[in-house]
Image 1: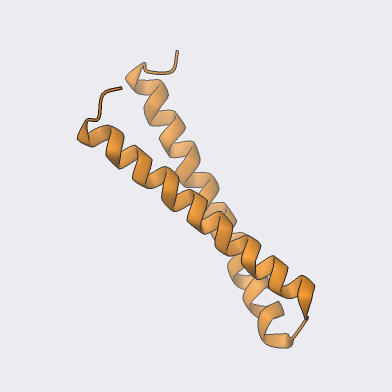
Image 2: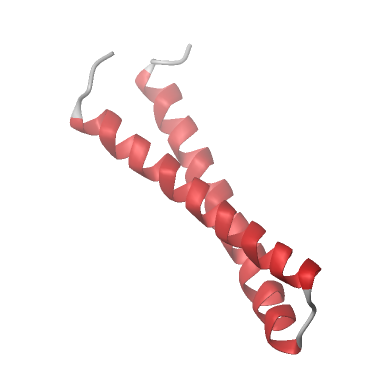
Length: 72
């Protein structure tokens, strides 16, 4: 496998998307364990934003890979 700087950059974006998703899941599990007003507010504001950012990052990486012709 080629380990070019572009590949490393795409891997970084994928890892960032994974971390954002994990943070949203941690908030959800905290809310499931014990519902407090602070956790509920953090989940309602940050949860969807974190998941949306992860979705956009992953979509962007997939689009870049398709444009580069590496996938098809």
